[in-house]
Figure 1 (cartoon, helix red, strand yellow):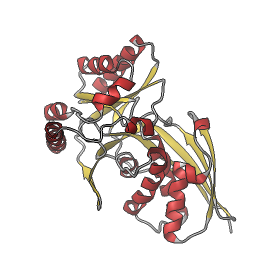
Figure 2 (cartoon, rainbow, N blue to C red):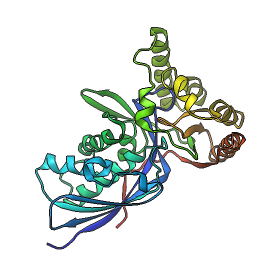
Figure 3 (cartoon, rainbow, N blue to C red):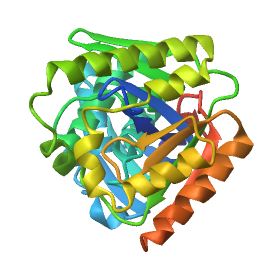
Length: 311
């Protein structure tokens, strides 16, 4: 059998978006992972890695997010086709920018393409979630769904799985700023409270409803008022040096709202123009610097595309 190969690129993502813990996420244009996937004559998935902090990522397929996603897909189809997969990490692990989701999304899209596309894009989601579970310990879709579908995603329900694509206002731009340290996703989940007060739950539900309504009506004032997190931020903010200073710097620079991206340590902000998004990024990097932390800012529109087959 002739060896088939391709390259596929999947971007990072922002999960939670303040008020949408485990149920809202959006895709960003950069950073991104690039996977080179080749068929091989023998069964099994062999993985090699390079790029940002690649030495911290397991290469064994069953412990690797991309490898586990591929194994799940192959098992569902009853296929024992083997693959060699090289992962070029552009999204650093433990960054809060959907690193595991980027690799898993690229993996399932690429393998599905090499197999002749037996599954629809929507059917790949559960296999991407299986890959995500390797990193987080639980099945979540707020990173993998944006990585697969692009845009802003609402997970209305996990049982049964119900994924909704939300509208993206024309002038909505994202800034993510990644400081030079890591927070492990599993550790960040362990500090979350098992229960929240009823008052907080009601307020969070109102914020989530307001945020989704704001997207539908391009009401940026409502978006900003709704971007308040009463679940994760109160405990996770303590893990990020200077968090409140950086958040204030973003708002002073004109951001609509700012919060922790996923489990952190990356922070995200939304703005109403590309120029303002870049200005916000500069302000946030400067605020981290005051806490003796180097950081990198990425500013772009919301990324609306699925993983891209490059050749």
